[in-house]
Image (cartoon, rainbow, N blue to C red; front, side, top):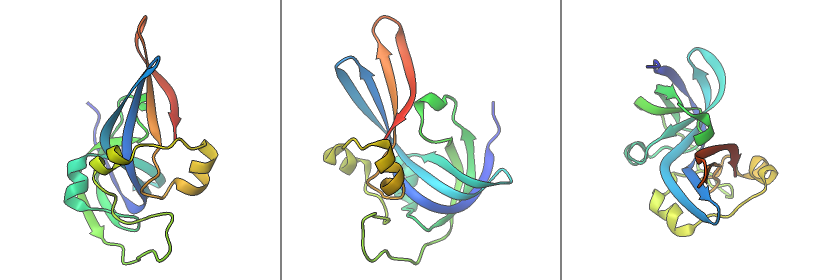
Length: 163
């Protein structure tokens, strides 16, 4: 079993964590929680990394862009099925809250809504370049992992992730 990696840093985005399962003309969305984009330290190395957290952690901590966090997490077991690099977070702690209130959205940087709101609003597909240029920090942006399921060969997760 892999060992959890300590991490800490400032949130640069908080977005929904959704997986799209596709099989020919059928599709199903799985709402897994939230993806935190953190700029800081991961196991002693500096950089930016993506951490998947569950809905319960979001409800408890109500994090937003600018908050400083610490905790431990595991590398994802199958990167083809995740947009996050780390998940199964433990010891999550809000070290400092952001005092900045954004005056003129978009992008929106407040506390993201519950997953039920994302389900209700539905999805809009964006070009990857548009997402990268304008949507990576907004609570309404979302990069989905896509799993293609073939009737003949069983499960065949796609390696592509779409915005």
